[in-house]
Image (cartoon, rainbow, N blue to C red; front, side, top):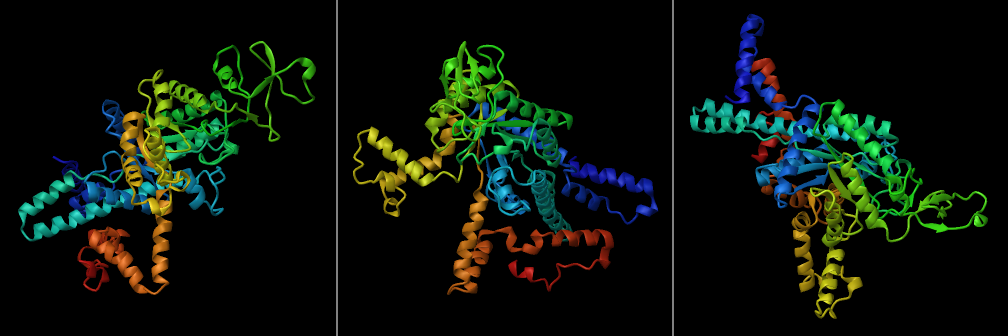
Length: 531
């Protein structure tokens, strides 16, 4: 017996126990409402989705072709439409997640208006968006199940037992739109206690995976901008532990921590690490500082001097009071960051890079795996990369190294449309197409995400509509460019009243008031024009 059938039986027993006061309560209607609200709380969601991620991680360990993907979403509606589309096209949400980007919260969801990605937005907007995303995904469940229930009632009324059985099977085996979310906590919005408090709110809202970065919280920058400042490992590890304690306190024992390192592009640190003996973690961190050896007579007023391996050295300190790392140490710092994070409780890694290059990523991951063999990455397939130019240049360089004639191409101008139909452009596009599979196989990437895709798609689609509608096409700009495509592509939102919950409201009116219900979906509803 399915969960739905069990609920009908249970509610029938309850109704019978209550007697006449419950005579008007339909056990099947109540069971339908339970099915449409499977997840009662965010913690239910976090526990359910954490188990999915753990299963997916194990499957990736066994077969790197089993990598996972997500797209960043800045509104619940965007996340909902993404999952509806995935179910429509692929009949499964398997290995497809949500990503919550701190960049998009700052740019689109702050009450201060658009902000740069520098942790200046309200920290409470992060769990608020997680809750909003899952509210919309749960509504997608309720909407789709509502359609199945109405079709089931119609099949029963028509005496079509075969169709009714098929519809009942679809209800009993319904796949939810609720999927894991990897949620960005930036650098924790403060100290370890602040990180713990915010992590709790995010988990309570439904987050099963929290991504945290090793930048200084009050100096945080977007990973693709300059001026990034990292913290010593012990500071970062305290925040990783804070997130783990938050998961354990709330009973999400298999919650996932994604430790992000920005060290590849960060040339500064705010602190000199505490070190107690040669070779300890603080000493390793300090070994990357840009230092000069000096005699006591060479010291100036206000200098910071440390005893480094028996020598007096002066770390290079900038007017900002920050300390500078030596040039060329980025990859070594990344490897140390990642090994340390995994050994101290992180589950997945995130290495922020300046370009999408499988070889570069693999060179670091291979070093990490010498110490932690099952190390896995979450990777940002960032819109901050010019993918076309990067991959055309990668092909240009590969051809040059192979001795192939590239005289027909200007490496610095490969973005030009004049190259779009060339063999070089075709090979570059093929490399872009297979990038995720190649990187999953060769560079240990378990999860591929695009941080800001729906920010850009909203801008692009709005630009296209505005150009046509306010130009010569007028209303045809909307009809041909939007509505006609919605109808022919089967976009559910073409029936926007249904998507907003009108039909579910009618169902409830019937449950509550019976034949007296005043419904919106009558013969005069213009949504009937869409079939």
